[in-house]
Length: 265
Length: 305
Image (cartoon, rainbow over all chains, first blue to last red; front, side, top):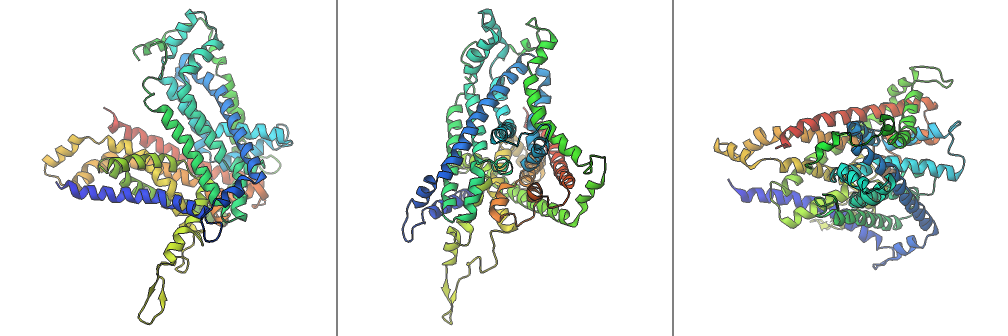
């Protein structure tokens, strides 16, 4: 058969895909540099970066992202470890629970949060601090499908039972096992989960918007409504941030999937 | 892996109760912040303002305004998922079976991972900067002009003059496609890589041409994967809110936009009807995920071994 013909067909679609990826990206980049008439400049970026509201909302979302990663790790890592070690039979149930945020659209989810926690007896929306607790819990739930999957895959690639037995026979207690044996073996899985989790929180609009907290998402919507060039600069910056997060995952997970377990094999 | 069977061996002297206590924090968290809000919404759909049971709220799903929003959402989701599936399939074909150059393959797969995760507000910004009134591509197309025989300037690609509008269903479709087709590339690539060379050889030995091989052998094998991916793409478009909000400012009435307005200002005039609306959406998504997992299981049959 004529392989040459098929190659052209393949190349046509590949080029089309590359065009779809790069044209909007390039268009945005070009647009973001056009703020000053007649020349290319970084003025839009300067304006965004020196806007105190941007800095405040970026800081808010970044702090929220880090806290979400910490809390997710605190909840999911010991749980997944325990499940793999003791009760592997409930894994299907847990898996279904963790993909629930995919089934319930975020806008519906935030509706549920407001209905449940926006009124007594469980009211959490009265003070900013309490709302922050609520929003963080929401972020943990929203990023759970990614975080759980990353940790579950990581846990599957190490021999939990042998590691635990070895640690116990050396006299380690549970805290020591989790911190000194499981955690170091999970660091790559944890890192990729953490980065996806962080990227999710940084780019999130709905929770911040409807729970009225000064997150990056609502700020971007507002800039998009009021300004022309700054949104393009913001778009490029968030593209770069996603790029960095995913790039780091790629770098850290490369060639490490097979040799993830450091000890005990 | 050789010690896998140890999993079933009761190696520790813990009581069963202790074993379950280990997962309590996780289940408690999920219960409080996921199950409870969802159930609350579900129950709210069947209650009136005095907390009495009623089915009246469900009637809101037949309100012409609501039907319109559901049909707009379905329209956008169906179109973008079909476009994404077809486009994504050919791209995935190109980088796997079609043996596109290696650098293209690597770039496309990497960017698919990136673009599939690139949604929300920044995506809307990118399309406004590219295809908006003063966008980059708009400007280029606008300046492609010819003088006709009468000396009149004729600019055939002035897209806004020709009736294009980014802040419309078409614009939304273009923007959604940016994350839809990469999602298809990512989901279908493993299935395409699972196509065995000897299936093709067998078909060719029996006298099949390329088209016959694809139509009678490859496509039936790939069908569950393709349908599964369609459902996945449909779900991701159906639940999307941020891109539509940032791109059209809420002027296109998707269900998600309507729910957003209901949360902000109770546009339906009855909070409980809002819960019924949300319930309708979750039901559509639930059917999607169910169909997806069934089709995944079917698709897995061919990928094994």
